[in-house]
Length: 412
Image (cartoon, rainbow, N blue to C red):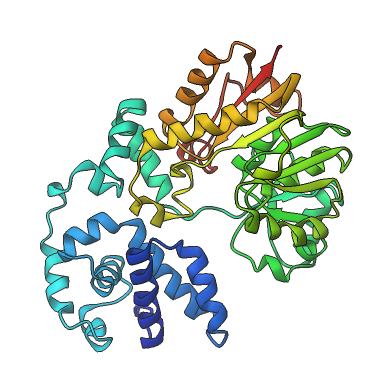
């Protein structure tokens, strides 16, 4: 069986993109999307090959660096191609890799036992140590293996426009195979990749891309029609849309973020979803006296739970103590806007306890006016069986991105 051929244009583009990611810390998915938009003549196979070279190198970066002996993009891509059988030394030489034969020899002679556990699992040393202490070496290996896989395509059905069964039928008519996700009642998971933006179900606002874990975090708010709710760190607005649907587009939903420019991109998504209850606010425009029935704080974090989607995020230096301090500050500010009897939901896409339960416990210790609410009870009231004081989602256990969620109630 012959090897799939890597063409020069594919190789050059993959090395360029990988080099930019390594130098500038750019998000690989956005960079690839922008690059492919500029090269519309590239076919689906070309894009798939470039994507595999870039993501394959990032998902095994620490080991590839050790084998190659350097961090130069072409060397990393070459070792990845050799390691996976995508190419051989002769073909790589024709693509301009002058030392392809030497790299192949290094790979053949490499002693994997010389790798540290963190290197073997492509994890930063500090993150490996934290997970090893929290869940043990065996589960850390399973977690790292899950984070090295491609994430599935999860969708949320927009209940304002259709039921899950209708969305599944519409996708099937477009030759897209989808089925229910295990926990989220409005979640669908595709059997493979699909050009979502070309589908009528997407254009008509029936579906929105959203990981099942993110959907469960939005459910912790327990949003009801007629309430006034704030999505405090709204970002691109995925959870804002989920909350609007839960509210049946009735009441007030404030989408708040420190980045006003990001919020401006929410407009077309709201229009497509048929949502009219959302008010967009930059953080510095929220009046001090405004209170809400519920506030969702999906705090900025290390994003360790999303590494299967963003393998390049492992490259960024982590200051977990600084992140935790920022998270406490954000949580404390948001808490001032929760009415008596109202809910405060804290969440992250982190798998580090210092950003999760530790932040919540520190907040509760200093704010006796808030009490914890069992997250499992909140979900059970919405037909989701996921018991526990906190919501804690692990990619290797649950098949979702890694998420943490806590529900607090203001009692005075």
